[in-house]
Length: 151
Image (cartoon, rainbow, N blue to C red):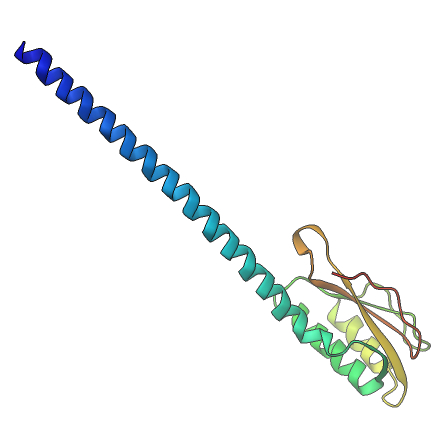
């Protein structure tokens, strides 16, 4: 009789242990959901911070000197390995290039931009893993709104 009583006590202890482990797993899963949401918010903040480096250049009547600054900002950004590459395309008169990411070619494009001319600047945004990030710059003649995709 004494052995049966000890066996029941041990079985009860095992059941209580399993119950506590199950509750612990449930708590961790719910906490993971909260932390996962926070991670997504941080990613969103990082995207906004990255895009903020370029969005001030957007417009349909930007000075050539401003467009040159934009291209130099793209060169600097493309030089950072952690940043996604940004391509620059131009439909503007006298400025040639489509999908340019190379530093030397971007420098050539910047030198083709007339400091006194007016240009339109718009952006293309990534999809998938780069959703919402600026992945391209489109330079056009002033007054013309080059095609761009919105985030």
